[in-house]
Image (cartoon, rainbow, N blue to C red; front, side):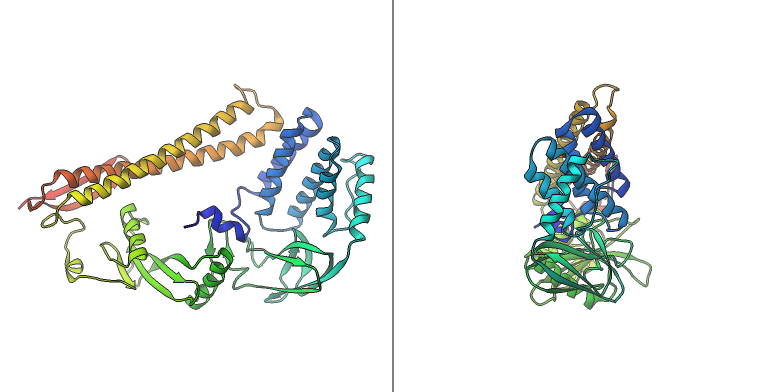
Length: 424
């Protein structure tokens, strides 16, 4: 099972902010580099900004910022007398834009002269044609972030590895990485590179079911997995909304299993999602899961059950243990997020002690603050889930097996769990 971050990394990664956020980091790094002489902090901030830029939709403004970051990293490396690092930073720019000239208002003559020598070295490397086409035609294309024109387009580049992408919409699609050691052609398609999006996790923006399955098979090949779980929202004609999950075989592109749970007030309770995940794994059906395909068994008693929770004939101890285990696991996860939030806060206090915060540290402080808030939100969610799980375990454990007591209502909220019983 891959995490969300590991799943999106081969497809360009999830964005961590906006272009304006990255530009604030760059401004803070420049202040540290030239005013505070804090070289280590400036380098860390510039590298974070460069990684953030790689996760954003390409464009002229982004490419300008990428060149700026690399030039500042080269300047920093030369101040440390690390000529190899300075060469690598400048070469990354000159490989895709050999005629780029460093701004004489920002960089000293020594760095500009060094850059001229690196440019000459890059131009002397063996070069090959890279032909880029898109379906449909006429889509703007980019190589390592630099705009190179609307497809079809052919450019000549030094041998090496490059990242090629096209901007099919305002939402960033996925890039393709290739090794250029001979004349090479590549085609980017709206039904794959333009349809796979990572802005809010890995999503497939296609309508036809067969197109979605084809894209999922290609995604599984990139990830190196045999099966992939796809999830979607489905609106029914009767007005109900369902959360549908499918287990797709990467080899055949066929649905192995598919099930759904109904949403109430736009959400499904955690227990319903857990049972949906169990169904995809085992094929065994428990309410409120409605099997669509691949169920191993669907007893008639399940379909006729009038209430979501029954305690008439089956022992309660095992369900209570399962609920308790889920509650403890959620509590442990909540504590992990609390600890991470505390670490973020400690780092914030370190770089901005008391009420004093240097201008160069503001961007890093804001980034840590956003991360801390996210950790606190996750801790709250898992804490609520833990409370619901432990309360459910207590209720199931205390109701005597075979007592005839029947739960007629189960209501969970951040303030607690309320169960209503009807006695015979």
